[in-house]
Image (tube, rainbow, N blue to C red):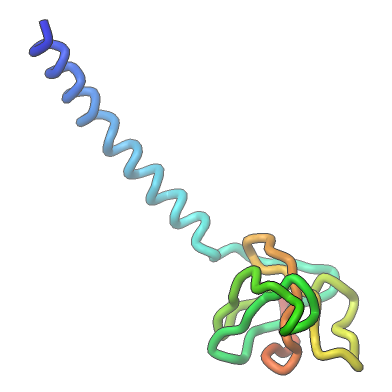
Length: 111
């Protein structure tokens, strides 16, 4: 009886694995960061090779939440990046909200 059970399980695995693999690939493609980003306040583009997105508008006090690479577009979380400040409130395509140093970003259209 155990041989029949093993054969049935193997057949089930052969039938199920391609479906799981296809689902994983589709999910990876959909969540690869290729999403369009929008903001009523506009967007900024990363100009440095890589920047840190921090929890506070301070390099000393702000924990690094994530990073953004050159060319990545971030949504502004406020109407402007304050002129007399060094930090801009931003959100990435994955929804992580934090602060980016203004010297490493420039205004751009959301895309």
